[in-house]
Length: 84
Image 1 (cartoon, rainbow, N blue to C red):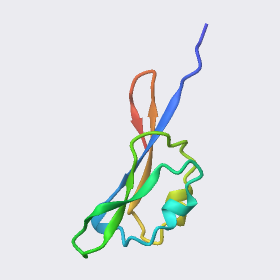
Image 2: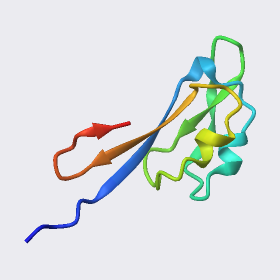
Image 3: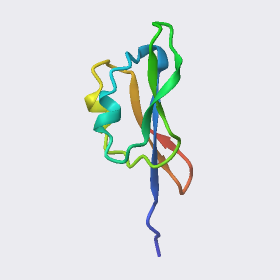
């Protein structure tokens, strides 16, 4: 009997690529992103992942105008193998 593989997701944001526009925050249906309080090298605050709740929809990824700033990572719980 095979069990269903439960997959979770997380968001990784490269702080120095983020311009702080907030588009990813607005696009997230689960509201798991927020504007941080630390400044990046450009002197702007940047979006951060709250740590849980991502459903892997990719809304943040597609809303971001900066290529490569956001990655949505899929995590398979059966073997904890990270897939991108």
